[in-house]
Image (cartoon, rainbow, N blue to C red):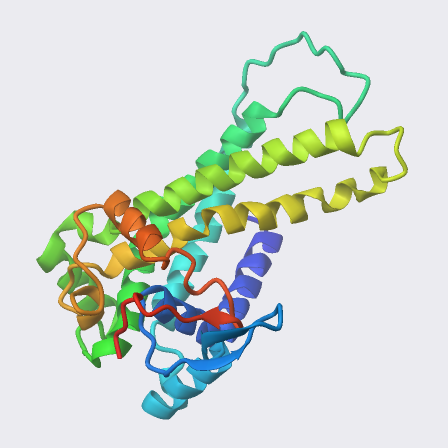
Length: 295
């Protein structure tokens, strides 16, 4: 790897550290833990609605309970997870780019850089790199989720990387390190193909060379990425829940959450109870009486 790659990893680690309190609060919300009572306030459409306090109030609650250091519970495994993700993605991406693929020489629209066939090979290589990164980083991701989930029951089971590894292996074996990986992979695959397909469609048939909006092509991936994130967010919640479900943690058992037999059952139950998008908003967090509460 070159210096630029290591610089990117260093920047990623820095961003992880800075944003960790927000990620920590988001994970707890995704797990269904709402220790703060909801209040009646107006939503973004100025309608009165029962809402949970904002993420800033949640972070303040964590700080009050565990102190400033407690805001960084689970930070180390998250750093390992993000670093291993970046390194694996870079390595697999570099290798895949060097592989000679058999290309179809019959390009029907080679004279137009935007009106070309959908880049299947490029999308496939990107998918392989990102999925490989998820598989390699998943054990650290699981440890991070369970470490943060200890806030709910104030356990001290996942105190460090070594005790966490021993606990997971003792309870669930090798498969325990990959709890919740299927919805993560599904989310990544859907996001990659959806983004590339939508971007290709918009750039080819909407923002054509004959329109005055062709300069907006540079923002296409940003917009479709946001759309894809909204569509796949329930899979993110499902992955977080499955990483903790059925463990010795209070957060992973009733009454905090059911013990799910599989991620599809979990996704279906989250959708049924209206909890599939919890944690998606930082401010307007609608409260529902049927959501599971860990308070």
